[in-house]
Length: 448
Image (tube, rainbow, N blue to C red; front, side, top):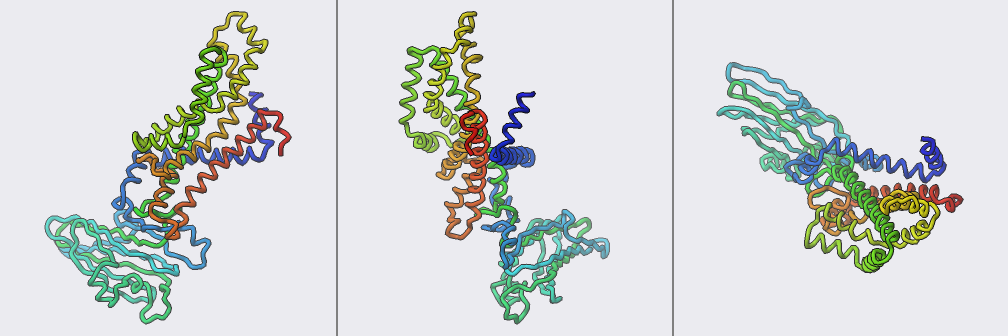
C-alpha cells in the first residue's frame, strides 16, 4: 500500500500524467456507460435498422449545438407522440357510436430558416369504420390553414410537403415555406412565434381510438448529427469508444506480454531455441504488416476478433524481442539468478519469477504508449472498408462519410467528430505513457 501511494504521488507530479490519466479515465467511463445504456444487441439493431428505425431523424443533419456558434439559427428536429402524452388529447362522446378525438400540439419556432418537412404518423384502432380526420395549422399571426381531410387506416403516414391537394390549396409546390411564412411577405425568412397543429378525428364505432406522432424534420439534430440513413451518429461515437479501447488494450497487452515471455524463454534456453526465435523475428520484420491485414480482411474475414488475432500474431515477433533479449542476457548473469539455480529453482520458475518481473517497469510505459497505434490501426482498416461489418465504430463513420461525399457536401462534422475522438484517445494514452516512462526510467525524470 505504501509503494502504491508513493507511485501515485510521483505520478501526480507530472501535469501530463494528470491530463492523460483524466482522458483515459473519461474514455473508460464512457465505454462502461455505453455498454450498460446501449447493450450490444440493441446497438447492432439500431445501427443496421435503416430508415424504419430512424424515421424521426432528418438526413445529413449537422449537430444541434452548431446554433451556438451561428448568428443564423437553423431549425432543430423534434418528434412528439400523443400515445406518450406529449400532445394534448381530448375525447368527447357524441352518442353511443359517434365521438370526436381532438389532438393539439403547440410549439415555438424561433429559427431563421425553414424546416425540411412536417410528417404525421397515424395509428388507429377500429373494427370496420375508420376514423375521419381533419388537420389544421395555426400560425403565430392567428391564421388557420386547412391542411387535409381524409379517412385514416390503421397505420398511415401523411407528409405535408408531398400532398398534392395541399399544394393546390396553397398554390405552390413549396409547402413548408408557405406554412411558415406570412402571406405576401417580401422577407424570405419564416415567421417566428408559436405554431399550433390541430387534429380533429370523428370516430363511428365505440372503443375506437386514434393517436398521432408529429415529426418536424429540421436541419440540425442531436449532439452528433445524422448520416445518409438518418442514423444518429452519437450511437457510433459512443459505441466506438469501447470497441477502440478493447481492441487497443487487448492488442497492446497481448503483444507486450507474449513478446516479453518469448524473449525470456529464448534468452534462458539459448541455443537452437534462441536462434529459431531470432530468425522468425528477422523474417517478420520484413513482412508487410498492413498488406497482410488487408489480405486477411479481403479474402478471409473482417471480424474484429480475427483482425485482432492476426494483429497480435504479427506483432509478437517485433523489434522489441531483440531489446528484451539484450536486457535478459544481462539479467541471466546476475548473482540472484545464480543463487536461484544453486538452490534448485526450475527453469519455469526462474523465467516467470526472477526474469520477467524485472521487466515490468519497462513493460508498463511501452504498453500504455502502444495502445493508440492499435486504435488507429483498427480505424484505418475501417476507413479502407475492412472494418467489422457489424460493429459501429469511429472508423466506420469516417468511411461512410467519405463514401457518401461528406466533404463535398460541406458536412465536416461527419469526419471531424470521430477524428477528434481518435486524436484525443491517442493524446491521452501518449501523455500518460510518457509520464510513466519518466517515473520508471530515472534518467528521464529531469526532462521537461
